[in-house]
Image 1 (cartoon, each protein chain N blue to C red):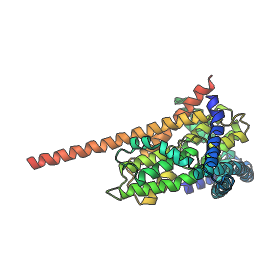
Image 2 (image 1 turned 45 degrees about the vertical axis):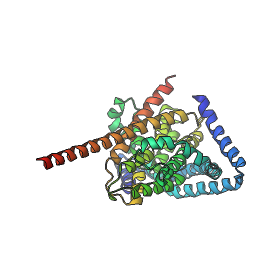
Image 3 (image 1 turned 135 degrees about the horizontal axis):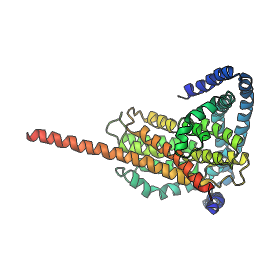
Image 4 (image 1 turned 45 degrees about the horizontal axis):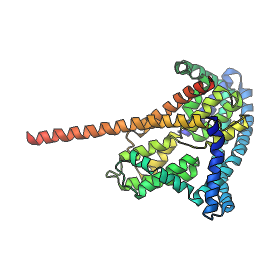
Length: 174
Length: 208
């Protein structure tokens, strides 16, 4: 398992660059173009990350986050989830920038190698921002009745929350 | 929705801070939070720009198209009524390839293109077709090979190997997707069953 994670990125990069060389692509020019796109994307989401990290910090400082965590902890204990993770499970389907902001704060508070940090990271990486995706995709083609999309997508989000806890619990017990 | 959540977070923090006697901490958090946020953005800037560059190389060298072609049997399985090798199938496979490589800004336009193609085959333009729902569910569960943003944040907070959770993320997202698709196909089967049933009763009515 460790082997995959160490060699996945290098292997992918070798394939990309090798293929580019074979096909005679202007590699560095392509890189610059994409790097600029990456920065543009960041610039687009930066205001929302700044606004949301600030709001989360204020929410934490006021003691409201502790109360919310406390109120929901019986539910979390039922599935062996650390209660601190609950805010992430709630925010993930709603806001991409918000969950990045929250992940940043969680890792700062509990550490990247902690169980809470690991569960939050896995949860964050294993689903998309459900409501944003649904709005953009259906909005683009004018569909009004989305049938069972929301329920199926939210079931997947709930499953991601449960499985990330379960898998990290198994992983850290070795 | 985010409008209410954001406003709620700020208002609750302020009111809670006053009631709790922690308003000093809350106003301090306004400054330290903004400061932390900018630092987080700087961390992300490096990774997003470098990975964006590599993805562009992949796109221009045809690697994305190859991954897309590799996905086509899977797409035939998930979208059985889709025309093979048609515009919609092509857009869906490219969207999935872009999603797997982890850059949303390439995946979203491709996904919108796929939705428009699916809409062209959709008999009722206001109601989502089976294929459309399947496609959106597929997109709300993200299957990523390299979770770039998350590894960047983990390395910022001292993870010795920020990529070591990659298999965990892959397993979790595949399981979550399986749940989403199962619910989706159960609903599709359910509506089909209902349609068959209502057709039967109509037929019976004719007989009577």
